[in-house]
Length: 93
Image 1 (cartoon, rainbow, N blue to C red):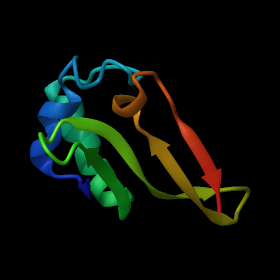
Image 2 (tube, helix red, strand yellow; image 1 turned 60 degrees about the vertical axis):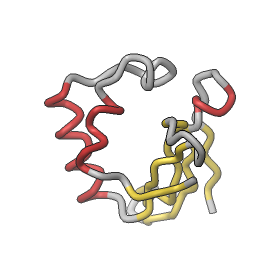
Image 3 (cartoon, rainbow, N blue to C red; image 1 turned 45 degrees about the vertical axis):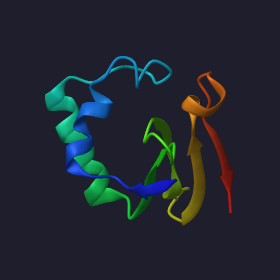
Image 4 (cartoon, rainbow, N blue to C red; image 1 turned 180 degrees about the horizontal axis):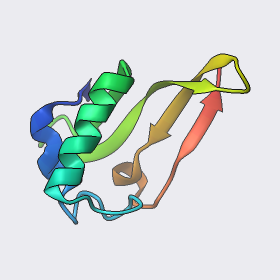
């Protein structure tokens, strides 16, 4: 299931188990900053979670990227909770 990120998601980003396949676990303060920045910067970046239990699976969305003065939209998918390995795949559209 996809849903918009919420301020109360800071527990996800500061949880070592949920973040085990990400670059690092964030402190509570870093998680608050990350969520605030993400909500302000990205309109279409969502949290992916298991529908039945609500387990955090990762993030995906459409992210604007500046490519030398031209903004292009990129599909970003980071779902380490799905396949159990660190994975970041991007496909430019």
